[in-house]
Length: 357
Image 1 (cartoon, one colour):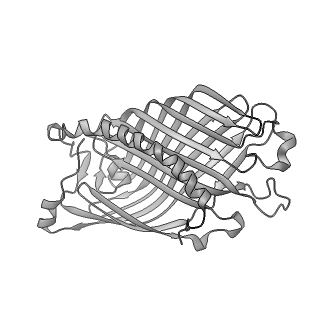
Image 2 (cartoon, helix red, strand yellow):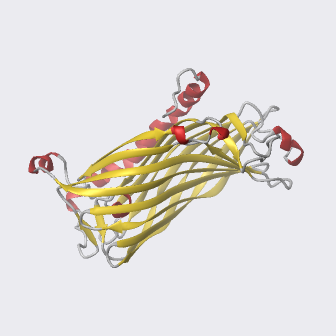
Image 3 (tube, one colour):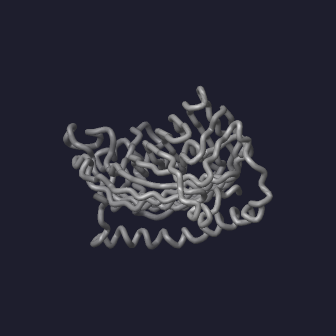
């Protein structure tokens, strides 16, 4: 079951401090997307020999997914192990539907399947990926507390147990928008929304912009106390950052005999990065240029009625200071089985066709 947040004032307080950064991100996305809406009626159509659409049909789906926000800490100062902190996230079972431009998904967390030896993670994970005709918008609002250190036995007095950090919190808010240039022959929606069908191989260049605000903190030093001899004396307890910058990439779908396909997308951003580390003895601020990556990998089967996909979306946000290297990985694994149904003509008049911005 989904974890409840009642009674955890520290967690709610941390979210309240992060939410003010959501508003400018939302304004950035809206300000970038809305001008394209004016061009909706002027957009040229798809090449139907490459992409088949299903206007007026309802795409229903059943899926299993697992979201995550993990954290990697290392130091270039002295030889020391790389620490990989992971959340004990639940597997979600969900149902959803897409009709024209409208999509709705509902999921139930199967937390009883979690490994209790990895501790308890309290989280709110808001990930949205909007695949429009000419644009892709990714939004993140992730608030996690409670991590374990992988692999088993690392920094733990018992080699058969996981080292746990219930006080460790990772918070990330941000958004990115990217232009799809070859939108007439390439469809993200075929692989990731299942309401279209990519019938021939095609690729496209991508270009856009992203903005992130993040924070990681603990009640004590981020690294385990037993590893103090192999880590710098500077025991950072909190790190905040803001990142923004342009990016570019490429996406390609390989189609075998019209039905079987594999889609891959890789985008890199060169971001201006401003960070602040908080130690017991004081604070240090830095500014650098850092690249970040976002990739999507999907494989599956598509036809007029059925679509089965297995996908992975992962984004990496990194911050480097003279003392520590920080990397946050956010993503989602998903297995989807979708079917397309005929609908009532009245419903077709209510919901608009797929937005072609």
